[in-house]
Structure formats: C-alpha cells, structure tokens
Image (cartoon, rainbow, N blue to C red):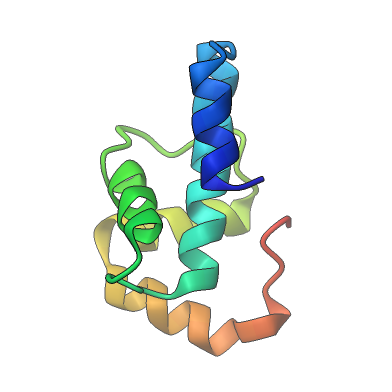
Length: 93
C-alpha cells in the first residue's frame, strides 16, 4: 500500500476508522524504509502524520509501538534503531 493509494481511498470515502489505521501503518512503514529523507514530500507527510497522533495505535505490534514512540518523541533514536536493526527488522511484525 502506498501514499497515493491512501489518498485514493480517502477520495473514495473509505470508512474513516479503517482509513486512519491504514494511514498509520503506511506512515510508519514509509518512515522506517526512507530513514529521514526530508527531501521526500511523502516522508514529510508520513512523519507529520505520526507526530500528530495523540496516542499509540492499539493495532500496532509491540515492535511497531516501540518504533512509533521513538519516532514521535526521539527521532534520532528512531533512526539509530532503524539503522542497527537494518534488514533484520520486518515492518510487518
């Protein structure tokens, strides 16, 4: 699922609760894979989406919850953990 597909679903009036969950998953996965690419407008959109979240998404696995907290409150630690785990980290876990 991509950012464009998310925008398409929003335009088609996909159910709001499912759309929010979808966006959170897309945004975190995108931020993990792009590693602070501030020149990428999709990365900036995803980063700001996660930064504006008011709570930890309940549907995230424990690994994704840890990454979410790091991204939200300590982005340098998020980048460090992402670099250390590298390819061993599976975004779907």
